Image (cartoon, rainbow, N blue to C red; front, side, top):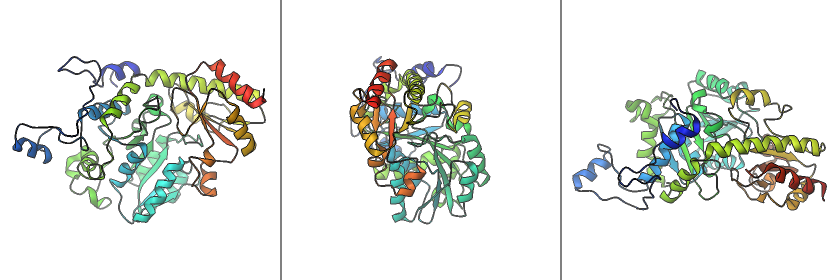
Length: 412
């Protein structure tokens, strides 16, 4: 991001001002379609021989403004915004996969992603899971049918940390692309493309939006992977476009035809949320660390998991890899499902919802919600147990959060 710091670049380098009106915010172009002066002009746009807007399912100025902001933050060459985080993942994978291909994935994934991979099986796409989150374990699962490797920067809810540089080196030795989900860390903590990932996906419904008022997802291409006709036949017509091949194929094909586009209104809300991403993440991380340390001292019988704790097996990697903190999510193992529910029901400030990244603290019982449809083996691999509570720590005053968890745990 040039010579500016994160927040300055976010506010001033990614555009947002409207040159025609002087508006300091991106306007909401709430239009399904866009008119043109001549049939020839519209023809050139559809043939990709001229730039312009035709139909919001394909492109829209408000959505494009959001895409440019995230591209700048992630250090990529282009982004495609989608209707949800799951839509972004689906587009990222299916843009290059076909029947008979395989994915190698991390073991500690979000339950919805595991469900998606299960759905892919009906289309002849299989997923193999690494035994553990280490480059060696990923390599053990790679074979001649593997076409991509996928992991989360910080596992949700396992909170395992991926060694991105080491994994990228291992994946690239097999001439494969590495796709990272950076939702829980965000580009404020880490820029995965700079560490060797080829494509990064964010569920922008979470920290990027920050207020739980818009569902969306976005994928960003680093333009570093060299696609071949032999490995990726669907890319054959686009390889001539070089670094832009992946994004060009996606926009001209799957993304346009599947129709999982982001709405202009939600793109606008994301642009607003992005302006405070750095400030919010700073507070999320600070609160999460302080609350995790407090809970360790308050209730030794409850296992506290957070990458920023010195007893975490990922502490040293997280300290080396992340800037500004260790993320905003912690988990607790209460001892039993009943105890977990008891603590959650006594809490007064946290909200019981299936989301993370809100300004307010959120809690959930993953085993009965976001990982409900996972097998026992999948739950264990993802760090999901019947007594587990996931806490997305908000930006409240930390002393109020401490007091609330204290009364909930001690039953005062």
